[in-house]
Length: 267
Ligand SMILES: Nc1ncnc2c1ncn2[C@@H]1O[C@H](COP(=O)(O)OP(=O)(O)O)[C@@H](O)[C@H]1O
Ligand SMILES: [Mg+2]
Image (cartoon, rainbow, N blue to C red; front, side, top):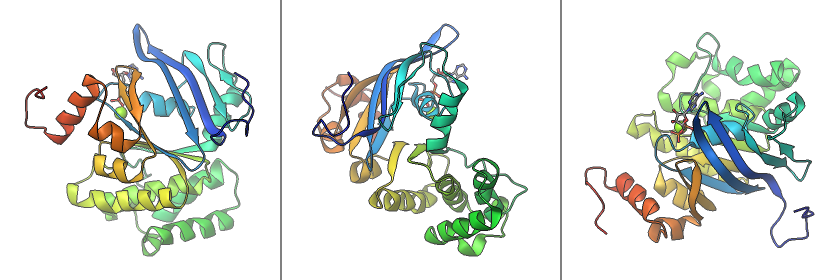
């Protein structure tokens, strides 16, 4: 269990989750999830609505406290959720990761740049001038520097979501978490957001992405996890899992995504 970094063939996991469980009342939503995320890796998380994808991401981000399981960050001491986790543990998780939500959650009364520097200034205590310089640099990278003084309502959905991504990057996280970042967008705006995400992946960002954009996952993800009813039903490289799923549930799910008008998949 106490595997030291460098002793295995794979590089150190940035994040190592074991046996993550989460119940809401009687309902056990996560039923023992294991997840390793190595530096620079992109993990795609797919699965039916209600399978626990958002709950898992929120658990990785410290927004949700699992009922049991352990989380290890960067080879540091494991946070054991079976014991009451300390506040410091949750803050550690929140400090190391940043989340991009399905809906951008930008503050409507703040400009683009103000939205971007909000976290660095108020959460990370970065001096405002420094946060603004960095924020502008990041906005420029996603082609939105000219929108610095615009309000969210003046932007398209795709632009808003790109600002959401910049806001996450501005926190300087080790791990980026995306929760269906394009599913609320008009179809013609999806590409510009996936394009930014692909660039981030190419730059070596470590990412866990909940998405049903299978061509994106196939192009970018190192590993795909199929979450089903609170467990990882199947995991593998996208090429294998998408083309040759081992599990019938995976096959049926992929079929529903690819052929939404069909009834049951033919065996
Ligand atoms: N805060 C909550 N309180 C009670 N039930 C919740 C809460 N959050 C999520 N759930 C339930 O947990 C299950 C999994 O939800 P979620 O993680 O959002 O799944 P997914 O993102 O895969 O659609 C759903 O049945 C949902 O209703
Ligand atoms: Mg969800």
